[in-house]
Image (cartoon, rainbow, N blue to C red):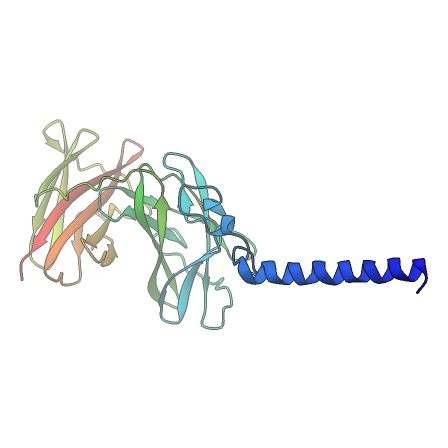
Length: 274
C-alpha cells in the first residue's frame, strides 16, 4: 500500500471512531434531545425560568385557555401575560361578545385569596389576548379569563407563579364589614341576595359612579378549590347581587365600586355552614 493510501485509510478510521464516540455520548447524556437542554426546564426563579413552553389551562364547553407567554413572573416587576382561547380543534376563538362594557375580563388572585386584580386584556389581530400584569408577592396565583361567546358565559383559567419566599396569609375571619381607601363597606346577607352599602366619613355614599356599566362588580371565590362566580347588580341603583346557591365552605367576596374617579376594592370573608 502506498503512503498516500495509508494516510487516507487512517483518516477514514479516525472519522469512524469520532462518529461512534458522538453516538455513545448522546446515549449516555440525556441532557440534550429534541426537546432542548436543561436550561429550557429550569425551576422557577432560576436561569431559563421564563422560557418554558406555553401552559395549557382549564377547559370548558369545548374551549381551552393556552398561555403563550411566560407564566412565571418576578414579584413586583411588570410583565405581559399573553393567552389564547382555542376550540376543540385547536383553532383560535376570535368571536367574543361585549359583556359589562368589555369583551374579556381577567381576574388574577393568589391562591390564599389575599391578592386580587381585575384587568381587561387587549386582543390582537391573531386573536391572542395580552394584559400587562404585576404580581405583588411570591406565590402561586390563578388567572380567570371571564368572557361571553355564543350567548354563554365562560370561565377558563391558568396558574401563574411568582418566584421567591412564599408566606401564605391566613384568611381573615368572617365579617360583614370591611374598610378600603377610607371607605366603610357593609354586607347584609338576605339569603338569596347579597346587599352592600358604602360609606365615607360616617355617611352613606349614594353617588357611586358607574363602573363598566354598573354600580359595582362582585367576584366570589371559595377557599381551597377556588370555585368562582362573577356577578353584577340586579339593578343599576344598588349594590345588590343575586348569586348562585353557595355550597358549604369559606368564601372571599371582592366588591369593586367607583367613586371620586377611582375604582376601589373591598374584601370580606363569608362562611357557609353545612
